[in-house]
Image (cartoon, rainbow, N blue to C red):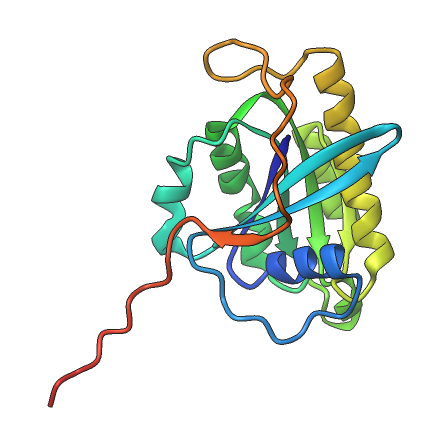
Amino acid sequence: IFPIILLGDSGVGKTNIVYRYLNGENPPIIEETYGIKENNTHLRVGNDQILVKILDASGKQDYESSINQFDANLLGGFIIYDITQQNSFENVDKWVKIFKNISAENAELILLGNKSDFDDYRVIEKEKGENKAKDLNISFYETSAFDVDSIKIAFQDLLKKILEKVKKKLIIDKNEEKIYTNTPENVESNEKIYTNEPENDESNE
């Protein structure tokens, strides 16, 4: 069982990336994510069949505290910024810190510069993203929700690296015990939300 997470500021395109990866088609207009949304899917990586839990975390500041306390022992994740938004790039370090707080030791991490289809509006040059990833000692890709190949390549690289670490028993949980070596139960592909959307409070006039 491979739990991975997508982290980044609100609006960088995390939910669109997940939709494109799982459905292989252009994403529709998607509502803003509240809390952490989970998508489960069965995949084959080489000769191995795995269940991937893809956690799509809200980038809204209201949820940062709860996400930072989310005890998931994640095996990997993506930190995502928008190449057209300077602030989203400046917040990469913050999201990396949150990832390290909620992930297993030696979990795999990849930096994504998203919305490469908006190159005319680019404010973060690709070289800057590459240098940031180099400083963090992680891999880097530029992606677009409208380019399924770029997303598939990034996911394939992440899952392959996780699988290699799991087989070498390099990823350990917070209690220093090897994790995710048991045979998972049959889990249907589905979507669920860990933290619900805020209740709609109707004003009584």
